[in-house]
Amino acid sequence: KDVLKYLKEKDVWITSMPVLYNWWTNKNRVELRVEARGSSRMVIAISNVGNTTLKEVLIPVDFTLMPKTYKLSTEIINTPLPETSVDRDTKKLTLKIKDLKESESRIYYIDYKN
Image (cartoon, rainbow, N blue to C red; front, side, top):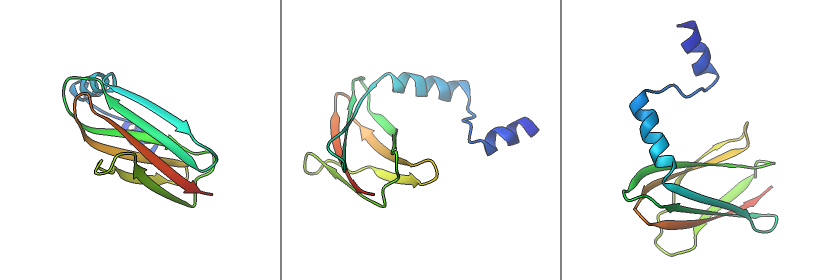
């Protein structure tokens, strides 16, 4: 019990073999490109190269300095915006992309100010 408590405190992923297998196979279906454009914009391009819909993909975006403000937009109108969560301690913005269909690609812009 002490080991599990310690691992949970350190935010270590504890899972089962079926969940690990699903994570591994889904990981191999995702192509991701992150590119800085200037000093205040990042471009995130994600593609599902698999043959099934991915229900949820989490993309952590690390910043050197966590921006004070950010705005998320898409390249193509009506592309669904992902949910986001911010961890200011680790300087990480996480995008939660849902229902990425087979052969689908999405491009997101993150405009930010420090």
